[in-house]
Length: 118
Image (cartoon, helix red, strand yellow):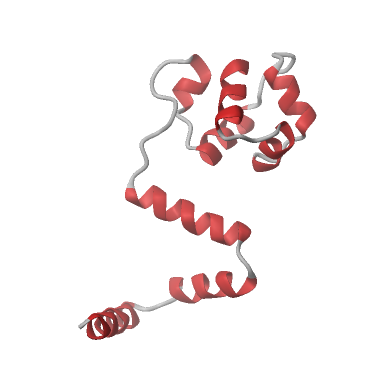
């Protein structure tokens, strides 16, 4: 698994420190994983798979595709998660307000958008 972790990191063009930040572990621990001095915890494996869209079977055994195929819902969730993590307060507030809309409010927005498109 250690070579596959390094392969992911290199493919994403991240330093060990940057890679570690994304999964909330130290760069020293990433170095230990890559040297095969320490095995990643189940949590670290799950975080790598989630953060980098890696197929867990591939990470553990090297079989299958490196990356999971992302559904449209996965892509939307990833974009929203990135905005919540990296966005400013205005962006977070807009997302919160959108998520709080009622079905009637969504319908009104839909009608408004179709009107301005014409």
